[in-house]
Image (cartoon, rainbow, N blue to C red; front, side):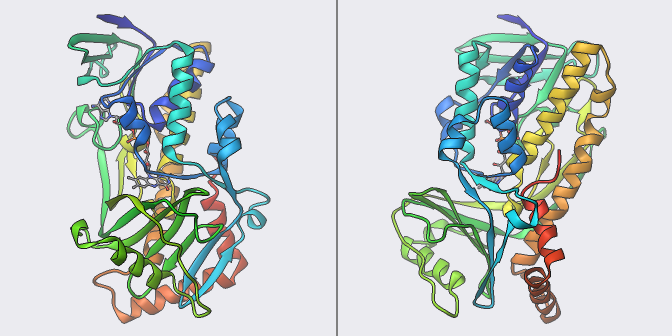
Length: 392
Ligand SMILES: Cc1cc2nc3c(=O)[nH]c(=O)nc-3n(C[C@H](O)[C@H](O)[C@H](O)COP(=O)(O)OP(=O)(O)OC[C@H]3O[C@@H](n4cnc5c(N)ncnc54)[C@H](O)[C@@H]3O)c2cc1C
């Protein structure tokens, strides 16, 4: 089957689906190609913290109805260390901005339903996806679907296929510069069917390692604890996970973590990664295809949404006024923000985790940083403005 469209989108994660939605609102045609099944993509539990800008965009573009009903608005977060909790008042420090807890899988469900309702093409379970011709004037995506070969000819390709996708590796060797840092630890994450033990997120720096208390809904708690990169999950029966979390969240005044059945568990590696530039010819990379941040700052999903907002505006300018200026500036516009978010995610990670090679000096410096953050309005404000999201 041969299809002709304006923008061929590889990947139906948050970046690909949001781009398809924004382009549709601009009257620009697209085809979305995803290699996983709809159920798989919708059930993948990942991010859950939405920046104010992501929330505003979803509401403004008509995909925020369920988010408004079910999202949990948080006006602060807690930083816990040395047995004491310290609240950072995001709302007061940013002139009324906040974050919203709403699972990435819920964002994906809302966007998938909107796409399907629009009647525009979205293919799940595609095999052998291959992109070519983007270095000339003939971008093209080939794939197999339901046993048949398909070909999409388009003006531009949007590589929204995540870190392990095909688009970035299809760019000529040497055309991209890669900046990367891996961290000497990982997160053991669990999703538990139990009411959260706190109304807000808790980031804990503890002698035994970092821990994060988060949530997905009033009935679902999401918890993470710092572990080794090669951690063996079978060595972590439920009781050991709960006991370890309890220790890391403990306060001098006493604090009890609610326990419940663990429904999902996994180990997430920590990495900072940027591929520059985010454009090669008529191929544009967006979201995790171009960059990865360690999850401490809760930024990956939000960065993906910011990229495709910039890309959709640039494509709209191209199709409505014939100007390529914004498309040519796509990479530098995005990277200016990406690097600020990289810095913030690295800083949160460095401040909150134990490092295997740290010295006594490093540890004292880390404590001083936490004390400064929680006692200086200027320091807390810097965290708050980054956490609720820098302007796009
Ligand atoms: C455990 C965990 C916790 C996280 N927590 C947070 C958080 O709290 N806040 C936050 O903002 N971010 C968080 N993130 C990061 C966030 O989930 C990602 O940054 C986000 O998914 C990026 O969206 P994306 O659309 O760019 O990529 P993806 O979500 O990876 O989507 C890419 C899509 O492309 C598809 N694909 C891949 N290869 C192909 C191919 N060859 N052909 C066609 N399709 C393909 C994939 O199946 C996928 O559906 C977390 C990530 C993990 C793993």
